[in-house]
Image 1 (cartoon, helix red, strand yellow):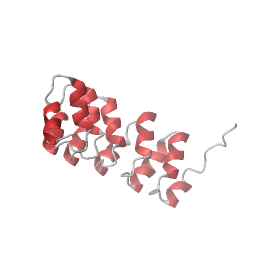
Image 2: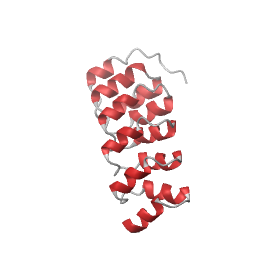
Image 3: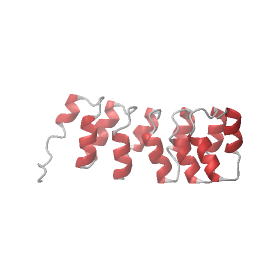
Image 4: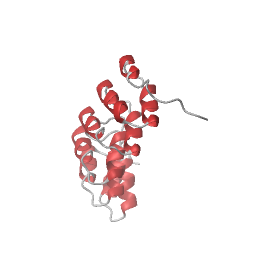
Length: 147
């Protein structure tokens, strides 16, 4: 696979080729930037999940109208902290679980997420390597789970 091939795929009429180009980490940055404005949400979602996506583009994608595109940003390990912090306002369990496992989340954002989320999300936040011990003490009021 060459960068030229990926550039060609990014301009293809077939959305599957554009999606493949958007998800490939060797796709040139300028091509990735262009794919963030694709009319097909599946292509934008693939671009949002690409760890090589430029930070400014990820910040724009974090504001995308499509939930799945924003969720892809939430899972991207290269996600900019400001965009990830903004996404903690989303009350969707799907968004919150993705944020809780993202290695780029800051301790402050993890604390905010854990303070208002469901038991499952708090459990994921508690396992995050960057969570602060004092943040965990705020989550000790959960009722025991009956099995």
